[in-house]
Amino acid sequence: MATPTTTPSIPGQPWLKKIKWDEHGLVPVIAQEAGSGDILMFAWMNREALAKTVELGEAVYWSRSRKKLWHKGEESGHVQKVLEIRLDCDEDVVLLKVEQAGGIACHTGRHSCFFQKFDNGDWHSVEPVLQDPATIYTDAKKAQPKKTQPKKDT
Image (cartoon, rainbow, N blue to C red; front, side, top):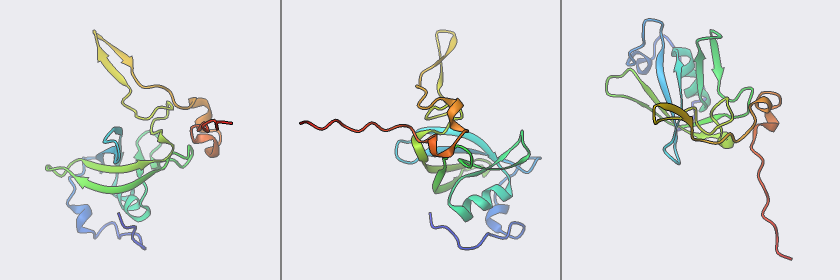
């Protein structure tokens, strides 16, 4: 996705008007990893968040709990580079195809927020923790999972 050089004017943009925003001015958003097809997370956007996402080429969401814009990775370093934006047939759900920095999308330190699977009448964690959540927000430089170097034969 080419990154525009200027912020789109929010009120007059026909592309923003096409979306069916809910009564709170929000639209649900699914973040999908472009390479694997994995669904990484679900979030919300308002008009400003979507316009900022287009401007930056990185995912910016609306935090309903904090009542503010949330640039994914601003604290953790786990930025989502947006490669493509799609709108569903009802024009009320946005899909972001992204490259996930560090391979971690979830605040629990996992690849995906959808790490719990229903099986035999209960929920079970089926994805490993890639990074201890206590370390994710302490220093963005620590946010990248440690890579082991292959041992050289001597």
